[in-house]
Length: 388
Ligand SMILES: Nc1ncnc2c1ncn2[C@@H]1O[C@H](COP(=O)(O)OP(=O)(O)OP(=O)(O)O)[C@@H](O)[C@H]1O
Ligand SMILES: [Mg+2]
Image (tube, rainbow, N blue to C red):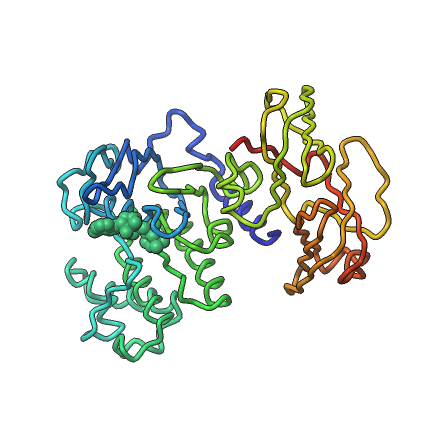
């Protein structure tokens, strides 16, 4: 996760104001109690969402949770069944797609099959009657950006899926709309090209100040690119926050488990002091200490969320200090992942606990192998409580 967090921090620096924290800032896009019914099925359920100018806003959530439907209502291809969509302070109800300052790149790229790559990209500009030189410059720039200059004269059926996706992306970008909606814009690209394109997108965003709203199934991508993320489930927004808020402070089990890998320990609160909560859990056969300022009731059922990279593994018992959580277990699986190693450790209770060890600096951990008896430990401030 470390590289993603670095990128996320870089984003925060580029956008130091964080308009969503300023009560006087006006959102550029606002969904106000927006619902969409298809027959008696509710695809989008009373969504409220404010998105600010210049944001790189990610929508994440399982398949069918309403992401595309939400974008289509913003672009004007679908009307809400209830509620209001506002752009720049104006209710856009009844405004056709081509009159909205919005451009959408569809999940199914919808390229014109009879036109070359270049013509597909230029199409949007032709309608604008732009001067020839400027048009040429923009097309070349867009082709360059998605690394498709070599293929300018091919037609869509002569391209791979990833290449078609890049043409669609160039076509969406070239008009420089105020708001650009991207539905899984990079899903067909390999890792290297995807990362390169992510950096290009961030550069474009920084240069042109376009507001991006994008859907992705790739959580690392959401973490790396976005100013904020909205996590959706069954047509509702479950949490909105910066990547680090969503990752470090998920508001529910759903968000904690959806974003990144995690270990979840169910338990009951047995002690609640002003800065530490003690939870008794069958899966640790003991107590878990958590730094938390929340108020809990004794006996309340909660879940302790511990990210795999917050856990240390050792063959020798770690020296106990206040708040440290220690468990014993046996390594049941391990997998190399290039820059880190994933361990699955079976605790005495039978629960499998996932641990990530960075390859660079934790040499002791890397001596640990299958069937080794190990100690697992994490600090009280390395875990959080979620209520439901
Ligand atoms: N025109 C339609 N008629 C009936 N149901 C629809 C229609 N469009 C979408 N739906 C339903 O609404 C729900 C939300 O669809 P949507 O396309 O917004 O999902 P999504 O979050 O984009 O999913 P995915 O990640 O798979 O693209 C789905 O259950 C889908 O079947
Ligand atoms: Mg979709």
